[in-house]
Length: 212
Image (cartoon, rainbow, N blue to C red; front, side):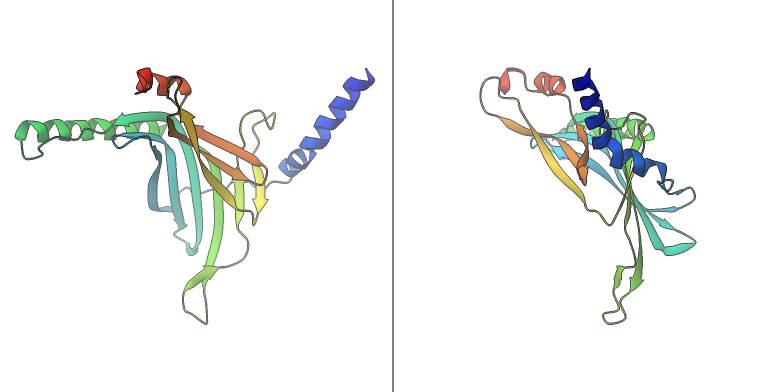
C-alpha cells in the first residue's frame, strides 16, 4: 500500500507542471478570417518515387494587424503515393496517365486535408528594425502544443513561451532481416514533450514486401 501511494505521488509530481500549466493556459489563437499566406505539406521522401504525406504546415497573418502571425501544424491520416514517372512525356498516352494520376493524388490529399487536426500553434509579432530596416521579432513567441497521447489525461494544450519547436526525422528498417532504413515520419518536440507523425510499420512492410 505504501509503495502504491509513493508511485501515485511520483506520477502526480511528474505531471504537476503540465496540469498546473493547463489551468492558466490562454486559449489557442482564434484565426477565423485570417489570411493564409503559405501552405506546405508535411512529407517524407521514402524513395525516389515514393512520398509519404503526413500533414500540413500553414502560415496565417492577421488582416487587421499584418505584424501578427500564426503558424499551425496539422496532422492527417498518412498517405503514401507512388509518383508515376512516364518514360516519355511526349507520348500522348503517357501524358494522359500522368495527368490522371496527378489529379487523383490531389483529390486524395484534399480529402484528408479537410479532416486534419491541429497539433501546434505558434504565434509571434514582428517589427521593423530601425537600424537595418528589416523585420525582426517583437516580443514573445507563444506556442500551444498537443503532446503525444497518454501524456495528459484530458488532451489539454500545453502552453510555452519563447521555446523552440524542434523537428526531427524518423526512420524505419524495412529490410526483412537486412539493414534498409527509410524515412517514416516526423517528430515535433517542445521542451520535453513531443508529437509524432509517421506511417505505420504495417503499411511500410506492405510497400516493401520482401525487403525490396
